[in-house]
Image 1: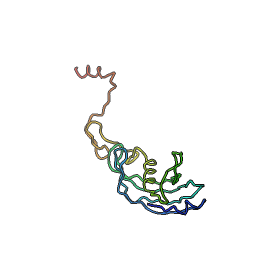
Image 2: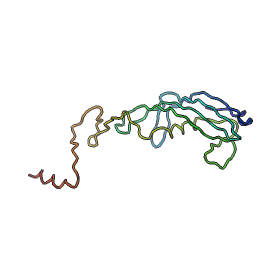
Image 3: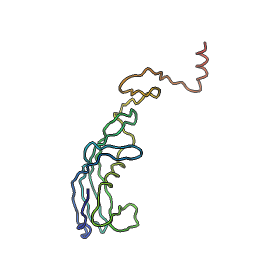
Image 4: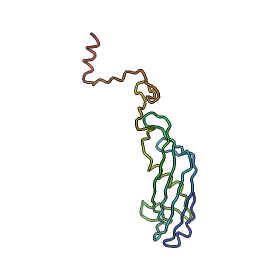
Length: 165
């Protein structure tokens, strides 16, 4: 999604409004691949505020992710607003996104904001039972026959005594 900012750069207070979609298949982050189920919707504007361009956008997307507990695929819907400062010249401020020329591609900025705003642990449902720690069965789909009785390690010696009798 490339924006032409030539007029915005020349006129203080000038605003460019945009309403577009970004269609990407997936993105890799922290060893996981996130697949977007439909194009990312991006609506907003870029406005000149004394040589610093203010980017405001409303983002909406749906991502296929793996449930943190049961590892099943689930879908996460995100809808949020982002605000960024842009400049096409070198400035010492690390918070300002630098770009060259009069055009900027918002794709990377949008994707970075999506990754920042999405939760780190995705759940298929609030009451997800997860996987059996012994056999690995998905406990949402079926019960396993594993013994889930836990014994305090301090009393394990006593249990051995009872088992011998």
